[in-house]
Length: 511
Image 1 (tube, rainbow, N blue to C red):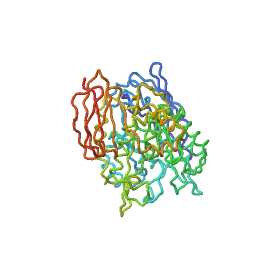
Image 2 (tube, rainbow, N blue to C red; image 1 turned 45 degrees about the horizontal axis):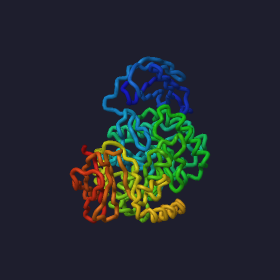
Image 3 (cartoon, helix red, strand yellow; image 1 turned 90 degrees about the vertical axis):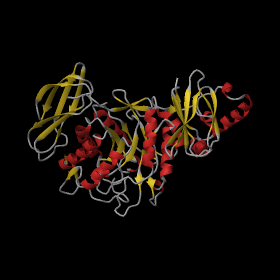
Image 4 (cartoon, rainbow, N blue to C red; image 1 turned 60 degrees about the vertical axis):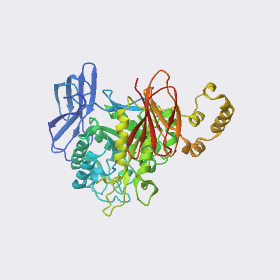
């Protein structure tokens, strides 16, 4: 055993020919006062497997019962390079050992349902890409530019042509896990989408009882993998076969039967999932209303990932036709607001191999700029949280504003402006102020990040702590340059800027 790495026990036994999704196979692992119970699974050809994720080093005693009866002891050595599961901590992410994790995601929905050559090409592209999280589906996807038949399906067929969830297709799961392992070896987190509505095979319309059998088998096989997150769905609200009560039951089922408590979210099309629910670890949102990010962070008190902000490409669809420059802008808007973002790419191709669904090669202009942003984010001394903001953000805040913080000659105007903003509905506020938002965040008093977006400022005045010294850098987010514009400043400081857009200001403490 190694701490934070999956441990597997395999046993020979009876070859099953009928039902094997929910066999009687349980293991109990004990280390001191820590006791973990996990379920095992049938892996075909008379092979029974139990998987476990040791999160603490030491001597683990195990006992397997049911279809197999066995016991033993393993010494778990301390982690050697592995960091454990990614967890939500306040409004950011950390590995179990406390190492900060900053997600930079991409989307390849039907990656696992392509032929081996295309899967291999996609994985080679991922090796050279800046992404450390990938969104991908368990079930195949049917949609524009994605109509191929997969090599295997998750279940065997019944005599009547329906899916027999009691007989998982072992060949599918072997191939699926091979792909997951290759991704894991690149230190990429897998945001695994358990359901979605884009379907011609009937997986989205399974009876709820069958949904739970499928989930039980999936959890038996995959819950001990340290680099997996659970995404209950892509666009859950478009799946008309499931009611809100069904989704809540699915959420409870996955959370309650995962012994290691992986990250868990539910992704929307139009209607946000209730991200305040206790099982939900972070918000996975589809939206272009990025100016509301600070409000969502305050409301959820959890990390926020904009997992779908449209795709860089040239499709005849509004969601798949933004420029590389706009994709980069949206990434900066998210990270400079204390949130995170996910990339996707949809360029027309004669072979209909589009990255967002099937993979292949990356063609866009945004990935290398996203790599530049990632370098900056990972150089910061800690996670960013939304800033107090400037004039407009103070007016939108629900917190009381200290009148002394407002210049005397502006207080009457500010009171009227603030009252006007608070009379607006949330929707009107978003529409009216979306383009006047201050994209800014900070890491305590150690670093401050502001993205100027489309604004062409010739100067800005910043208010820094008086008792500390800072360096100010001007960042060109598209040309990927960093220029120090102030060596050592503190307190109220006026900075001269070049008067063009797509710039950011990073101020970091030097003493």
